[in-house]
Length: 91
Image (cartoon, rainbow, N blue to C red; front, top):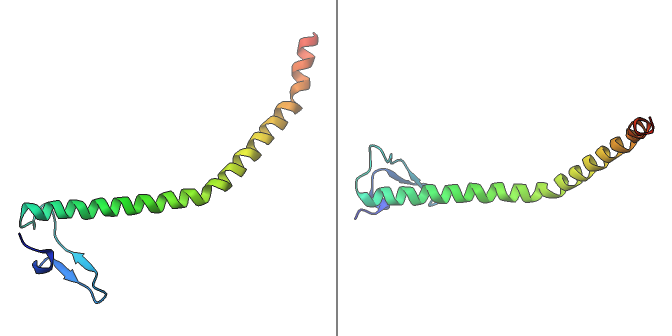
């Protein structure tokens, strides 16, 4: 099995960060390369989901306040239109 460090499609940056130039449709050398590529993509997906979840956690208090405000406004509108319904029932 070829290690990614030994492959020509892997570049090591000055900060020791690996950059993979391999393409799973054309430049895969071994079946293990495809498995590694899938794991890397899965890690990226999980990281992006965690970032999105942290953003949602920050937005949750503001959303709750907004929902409460909208609920109060709708209740106020219902209360202000109640006289119309009462007048119709009297007739």
